[in-house]
Amino acid sequence: MKDSPEFLNLTLENLSEQHLCCTINSKKFSQGVETKKKWLSERLAEGHVFRKLNARATVFIEYSPLETAWVPVMGDNYIYLYCLWVLGDFKGKGYGKQLMEYCIADAKKKKKSGICMLSSVKQKNWLSDKAFAVKNGFKVVDTTRDGYELLALSFDGTTPRFSERAKEQTIKDEKLTIYYGLQCPYIPFTVETVRQYCEDNNIPVDLIKVDTLKKAKALPCVFNNWGVFYKGKFETVNLLLDTAYLQRILKK
Image (tube, rainbow, N blue to C red; front, side, top):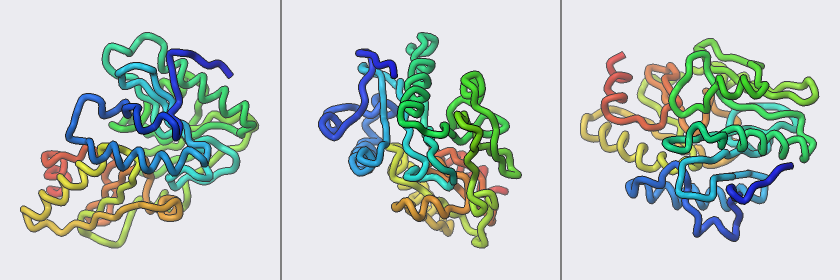
């Protein structure tokens, strides 16, 4: 497996001193950074990997064994790829390719059956680039009726799948309902934004914290830290749910 001095992996020893790539330009997510670091400190022993460019940049990959990944995806001996981001001036320098190659090499070294990730027929915000994944050999192995896809790079012919519960993408409750995880540093800020807006406008809302692996595996929707329902229907995985976006959902 290739390594590079340009990159580093977060560990229990360096976690407190390292920045989290996706929030380096904003102080309003500071609470989320601490929540994320606590969550990470509990996941690293499970084989969770957060690898980033050793610079002040949004260039990183994050993945974990599927068995301990907080997503409603089932399968044996797979890696689940949560995020692969390269933003700003760091695009076009081959960093995304290097990070993906590291993940693939790491999976093979650990004798995994493959790697999988959440995607969609039409590219959606907060999902890693489908075209890039396909270029690296990923294929669609499962789908939901509303256009979400599970992509996989299989090394041995086996494939993972969404849980049957996740593929329903519906709940019985009609009110605005949001399932949220603890992994992304943007989440506490967005949860509070939604909570305050709903309180100010007398909108019933159910904010459900997904704080255990068991809860994550049993979710009624595809999930990558965030899942929004309204009138019983799944709406989005986009976790930057500002008031304008929220208003559009509530008008449906």
